[in-house]
Length: 473
Image 1 (cartoon, one colour):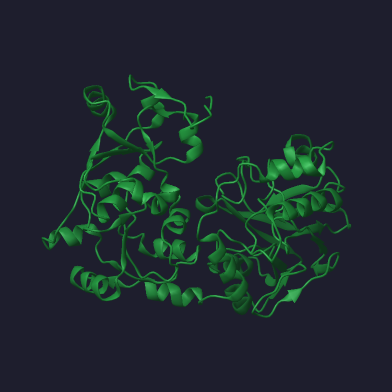
Image 2: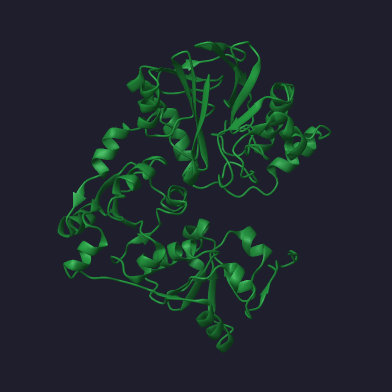
């Protein structure tokens, strides 16, 4: 028996390859199919089943393309209503995979159809559970992401989740391995651990949601407390996973078209395309195509695109590091952005070589920022970190302007002002600066300074002060 976790860090997502006696099951595959097909082929094995734990919201699963290419069966648990052919499993149903068995445990709560898959080894012993977003390491799935039926609340789903954990998962052996769909960094939970697997026994001891003496009411309160609004693309990805989507090979062919600077400019004008620059943040700030938006490929690229670009069908043209263009197209497709229509051949250097217009904005280091602040403590500072980060500690005179909600907060800033933007590392502030610049804000300055450095400088920092509440550090 082989179990391999195929973990994708930029999405904090774990897919699983299970093989026994020449037969393979894939659990929660990503959009691209080659890694699974090639792994099975190299082992002289055949993909028999594709198990989906639920309708994923944070990425587009590869189940449809993989099923066609491998001639494999798609398996969902109860309540999964799809627009394509699949096997709708019953609670307790078992599937033979070589010499091992996979048993369906319907565990609603994160979503109504959420299902955990229990792997029984060759001797029939409980070996591992693949929990999807039902149980994470150190956390559980948030109960507010499902496509809600009329009258169904997050509290209702949290109650279902409490029952699922206690009736289906906690009675299993402490030695059972827990393999979740996500780790730290995913927006599908609140406070996941950095580890990507554990034993169930250790989770019973350390995971707050599995506390033996917790009441149902306490569980519902803890699980629903402090939930941030989900990124806007989550519900759209869930619908794609439920209804279907374009073939990944067609998406890649459409997006991986090299365009000369002249053709690139023409395509931008003809299609009202978003110019998406995925280079390094420092390189971008030194010069970029006017009206292009920065979202660096070496950060949380796809999730930030999903949070900021409202239309999944928005035509996108890429400015990428040479050799990484197809990677960018593929990672956009993972979160449902299938309408990339090409990339700038030769990268930004080819644009410059033709003498075309270039835009830029200033970046400053800590000594410069500190000197400016001491000379003018009332200068406009936009803190683009998350509200929770801002609440913990921030520059006293800074304005909270979280990148996550920049589209909703544009009315709070004026194009006539000069703004200094900062975050924790400079990635988010560069994204925000590029958006403001593209929307006509000419006086933006990117402070490329870790917030830890700012808080240890002479620039005053303090707690967030609400009208009636002061939040302590």
